[in-house]
Length: 469
Image (cartoon, rainbow, N blue to C red):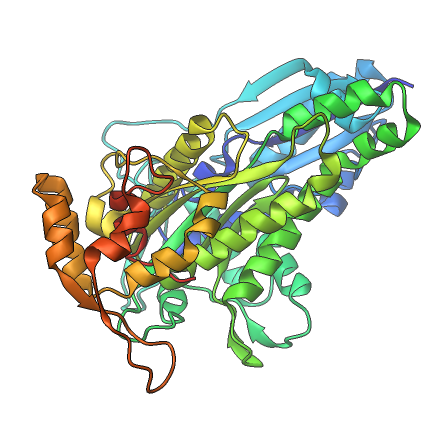
């Protein structure tokens, strides 16, 4: 039976979330999205229309998906939903789509019958004061500064809404991603998630380096191709038809399972305190989250591995689902919008270099490499990271000053082989009292040299800045 679906949502939701430079603005926007797209509110929006909320796609932040009984009602449904979301999300870029199919997954795969865009519109005047939070829209209100020094911030319509929602968040209403993450991590009742980047940075396992974070932007690979293959198989096999119907929910579940596993992988056994993560966006096959910098690599490796396992039931014809990630290392004071834009660019590189067929990671340190442009370094495949994990751990144990010397030698293209054989280093022992002999840098660098190493030495040295197995 042919069904008609309407999706209305925030386009490039990560860009909207970080429009306001401050974390409080991001959390306020996340809470606004949660409320605006919650099923009870959507049911109110649809009052009097022949359309109902469905759960075939799972719940994705920033997206409302409804089933429409009569295709003639699609324009009215779109108008009603867009109007309601615009009222709650003043600066969001909204899109609407009409999809047709036997179920949501097949409709999504077939493509849109119609698509409409609704950019945010704001009256502009060249002499207007710009918003202190986003520096984009003109000021409409003044609010107490979050610095607590008695000053006032001048904010635009959207940022004022974020501020109001941020105060509601502080007294109990939490963004969807944070609320669900608390629920998924049930069993440690005394723990919570941080509410500021400074608070998160202080959860670093290294007290002498507690101001660096890593923001991770991950996205699924080959999910669309897998669903297309399922649709072809579903015509012949009822079991495949059921799997096709459940594919969106299975993918969303894999994302959450992988996130929870990754958080647990970097968390200690303390019954109280904070989980070392702030989840900005979770849903579908997307993840945007921030962790203390020393936790980045175990977090990313666990997430990508667990996500691939979660979508394994969708595999067919030699094609398997996976995810890739862009990772940005940055100080806690770095504007979130800058960090997220760079992470998005790095993610695109990781996906493009491997045609979306293999889990890969591309990364950059704003502290060491800047944020003006993406650093020219190829991404690393997850399997290669796993294969070289012990070798990277040994290289990371080399004193930082010697690794800096080695990196400079690479940049200056000096006689690398001779230098590597001459420089001797003492490795840190992992066993108390164990005497570890000196080795040459050549021994430690050898796995990363050659004509085309899986992890080139320059990449390995960049990895070891924050490497933790």
